[in-house]
Length: 292
Image 1 (cartoon, helix red, strand yellow):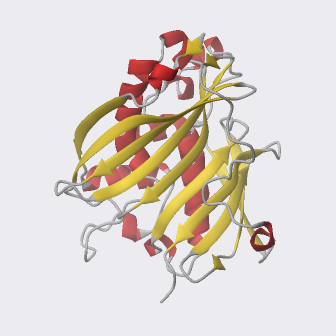
Image 2 (cartoon, helix red, strand yellow):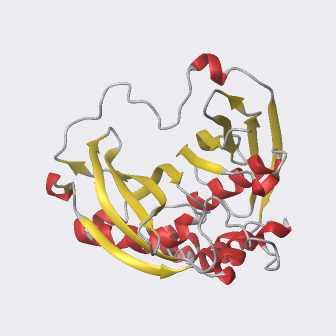
């Protein structure tokens, strides 16, 4: 099984989707959020979107572009490996957003082929809303592209001396037996390995597992609860690598540091550990708007 170099540059879209309060609230509810900023439709300026909400309107385009470049037997071998989201501005109720997906990176890795799909979204005026580099590793699959650059930096990573500053906070997050089902319907992200045990077992998994984006969103929620403004904290970017799978039911331990500030950014470093102590989300960074 091989992904050819001709996959690079293949594009799908644009696809237009309407963003309404119902979808925004459902996504926040799936994550167990309680902050009224996510639900109070009388709030001046309207309700807030969870920072990871863009995964909801990006998912159909991710499927579209994969269908153009991947055979079915290759697609089922994909695991979410990396995620790098830039929020140019938060999505809002009433938005009509157009998303385009492009295969931006194709590299040979030891476990298989690594492919990054770039999902770029603009509003009705053509102004950028979000850009996501969604990296997947296709296990046991070859690709015709060369090896990755040596010592390629992780998006949003900080120098080691900055990583070691500050104190860690920690929070335990329960993962219910039905969270993957609830998240699937509220996010409108359908992949049967998360909800259909027969499909999960057939794909070689031990059982259904929680979505990587759900795991990341839970960790981001905990990080925002540590900030003075809570969910109203302006998020500019989120990046991470994914590790071990999250079983259901189970629990996560989310750990992070206080923001590390520089002249133009504040960065929260975080990770999420699965019930066995192994990292489910690692090398996590959240870029926050600098304090005035």
